[in-house]
Image (cartoon, rainbow, N blue to C red):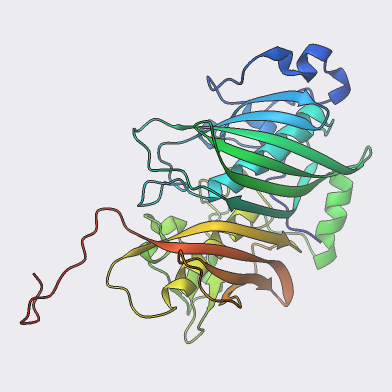
Length: 367
């Protein structure tokens, strides 16, 4: 039905209290205190094994369904990394609201540990990109979060959130996310619809074995430094279509065992696909470029299985390039004839900081 993201109960990590009804009046309104950036929230409340993958530092309930959230984005990260222009990775916006949805579900909406989280859709709009960092200090991020609960009973929570994102005290844009949290019985029913038991991660199986004829994309072509973070491979003669390539031992995507391809991996695959498709548009540019997302909206339709090939497409959307160089692309992921996810991503190519394009002498040589 929908792609599910980071839903598994973490072995050996105790459950935390979650019932909103148990909160006192002081706690509901954050006890009139300021947000703290001193330490991260408990990792079990955002479904992470590694503390380094927890970006939230504090959450205060300001009113019913209204929350103030503090997050600290890392100086650098094995996956979420600042761009060559010094700006942060836009995928941090989505990962941050993903963690917020899980935290709020457990802490304020009574969702017990062991329930499974299903991502329905997500989006972001960067109104004002953060400037290059003046120092190596982590970024202090605050989010003003409003939650809309569509349905809630003992077996399911269906909700959406919208977050106004501020960095260094300056509003930079918004991020949204819609999700469901369901009990194990309902989740197992959803997973059985394909037939057979889903394959679990943690076997060390490399998905490149599913597409042996495809050639992995070079990291620099999709703005990554490490081969392990390249999620696309190019099959012979397939224009703007790529094969999903994902190692299930990836330290970020498979922080703990999953029975599906995580949604953040599909988001990153779409980002990489638009970067590759963008580089094929227009006249060749002698200067290297970084593809930077400025907005996006993605919807998830079905689970992406670990034991079957999946394809990712990115095609230029109708409409001319904007004055500041923005281009929009329609993206889609499919597997065994099923639509996994679809959406639209907009971005622009930025010059790589510190690069000096070569000039030619009158004799045609490089100066």
